[in-house]
Image 1 (cartoon, rainbow, N blue to C red):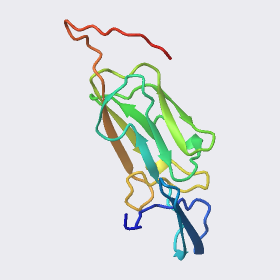
Image 2 (cartoon, rainbow, N blue to C red; image 1 turned 90 degrees about the vertical axis):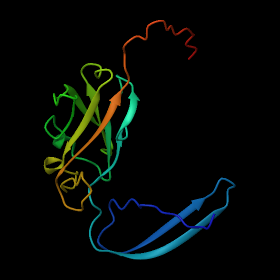
Image 3 (cartoon, rainbow, N blue to C red; image 1 turned 120 degrees about the vertical axis):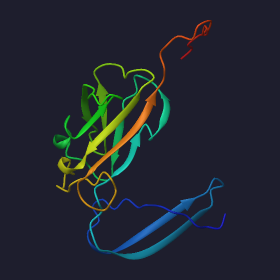
Image 4 (spheres, rainbow, N blue to C red; image 1 turned 30 degrees about the vertical axis):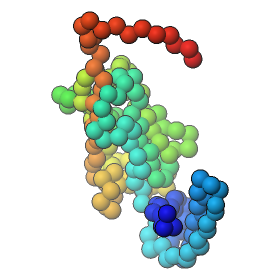
Length: 174
């Protein structure tokens, strides 16, 4: 309403020094606004995690869901291993999974070998000391501004136990 906004620009590939940044916004009615700013970039864009799915503390996540992380820069897929990116159950046991990075390197998914345990807390673990971007930058998974470190996020899976006296009836149409 007041014309203000907050955005984190994608600075991948932008070199240190002066940069011209153009911000363009379009509202639901099609009105456009553009602001051009010149900024001095002191450091290269950090290599961080931009999103983890499911979100932290998410509930009733399906047991076939494939957890994923998104990166601010393309990741070197060879640095994603079962020691640097993995899921654990509530007892701390590592879940067997295959790690698949996207072709663009902007995300990676965990394809668990079996369904996730139902009605359980699952933790996604990210060990940043050994995860690198394709440029060789070390990941800052905890967002503290320092390369390396660890991060984790947890979610809860849906229960698969039947509810006595309950039936679910319907049709799958598509």
